Length: 413
Image 1 (tube, rainbow, N blue to C red):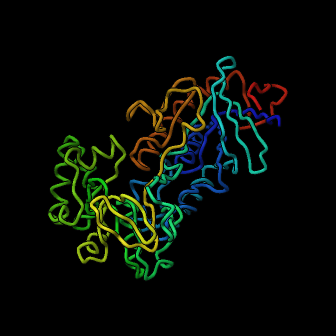
Image 2 (cartoon, rainbow, N blue to C red):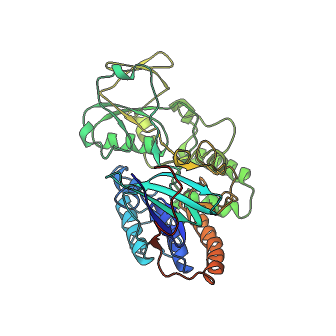
Image 3 (tube, rainbow, N blue to C red):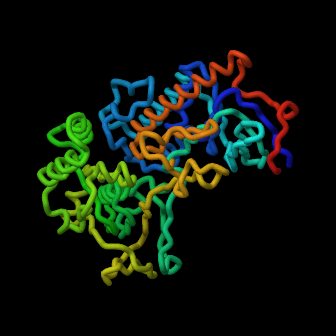
């Protein structure tokens, strides 16, 4: 089937999460139209469809605002997921961002002969549209696809196995023994939620992890870190954070099964490897009381639970995989070496926002929503300069128009 071809008078933005919305909003403030392509039928689908009910922003709201719009003053310091989604919807409305939903991008390739990007997307009816434009903004983010590890004997386990993207509440697990694989912020919080609903969780901890208090004496730990970074090098700040964590959380974490990494502080590992430190909001208390059991890695699953790497058997009625997400950029961005095989810009922060031939990225800094905002501002400013220079000779008032006859598609159908 031949693809319909559409000319985009501005950037083509792939993804309508916080990264894509902020990029489109910043472009709007510069007077640059754009087209936002989103595979789902709503903005921020990860937040709306694939998060648990009790989720809140892990950082204070002032560190999570998108460019040009603060959170409502009535919001708490750590907004709920529903408040954050409402904020994003208001944000999109305020900056007139209207994504084209159910447009799943299959490929994006730069046409060197034409000097243009060709982005092919299909809808649920398998109707294909090729969007053509001078700029491409990759905004699908670090959490586009869930990670589901393969385990020996997985087919032998008889209970339900759920990824954390499908987990909503601990209520369906009341009274059950639940093995939670993963000890990041999601794994810790799911275990806490399960406890609060009368379940009996065991948390699999395979690797060393930094655990920090979310707050210290009423002040957000992240706020303390940001303040210290104004005056001290990152590694010294990391040492201070680890020292403060010991004072506020105790020094018995290794005895509880939570050992700290031998090298690399919490901020260093976050920035270099994307390993986010766990911010404790009550799980440690449950671990100390025995309500949450900490167990080592899974060797294999069996009918009634799992055998662990240390030889012990952990009985389980259900499994929740809090094993995270990964970028999907390598699946659809073709002919470019700007991104690594893991789906991150090869250039390290803060240089990873701009590639060649009009290629940009937003939301791959491993620095959360503050990194998203920083990228969006830089990308919009850079594109706006080129756009307004070009528009002096070829003005247009429409963001997208059909050019099936004006610019023939060269992509295979």
